[in-house]
Image 1 (tube, rainbow, N blue to C red):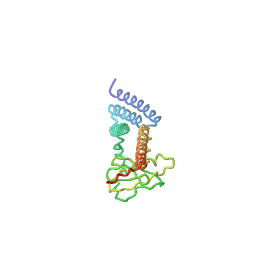
Image 2 (spheres, one colour; image 1 turned 90 degrees about the horizontal axis):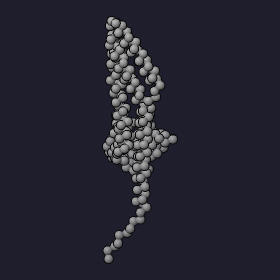
Image 3 (cartoon, one colour; image 1 turned 45 degrees about the vertical axis):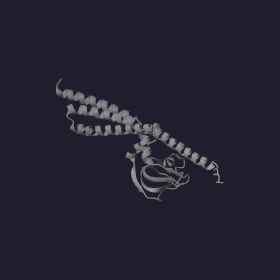
Image 4 (tube, rainbow, N blue to C red; image 1 turned 180 degrees about the vertical axis):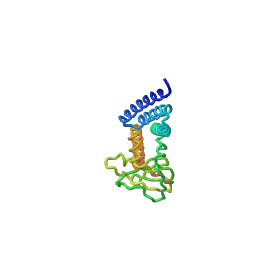
Amino acid sequence: MDTSHLAEHAGAAGSFFASIFVVATLSMRTMIPLRVFAILTNIILIATAVPTHNYATLILHAVLLPVNTYRLHQMLQLVRNVKKSVNSDLSMEWLKPFTTERKCTAGEVLFYKDEKADSMFYIVSGRFRLVESGIELPVGALVGEFGMLSPSNTRTQTLECVETGMVLSVTYDQVEQLYVQNPAFGFYFLRLASARLFQNISTLEQQLAQHATPQVAEPKPA
């Protein structure tokens, strides 16, 4: 069999398998398996484009292969980081690549109670306080996520900057896109938000306990 026949068979086989992968991707709803199949499609079409000298297909999928590989790595890394955060210190470092920087000055209000919520914030530096509860948020805290989870989609408290600092903001639309791309992200994000809610409840209980404890008067010197 000459090289032309081999090329024809290779091209036909490649087109067949590529068609199967394309049909399979249409039935997928999440991003990780979609990326895996896209990578397999890229590899098969590159392999079949070489013997057929189909340089247009070869160049196209040679470009798409590293893009799909990078996106797959990014999504897997995101899920790993969220899992790690849930099981350790509740860090939100994983969220940084999807955020926008915002500098805040002392006295500035980032959002008010009962207003429409459309984004959440990661505190990088400075001091910030939830006005109604009096809770001061440390560096590395996430705030504003409850507005996304509440039925009314409104802020539950007012956030004020106490000392000049910087926050990273991420819109709810971006978070929803991450969830659609990988439901595992949404599950661990919900666990993370729930853990922070329990932290806030614990802090309030401690504050109430301190106020409820009667102050014992110190004995006056004779």
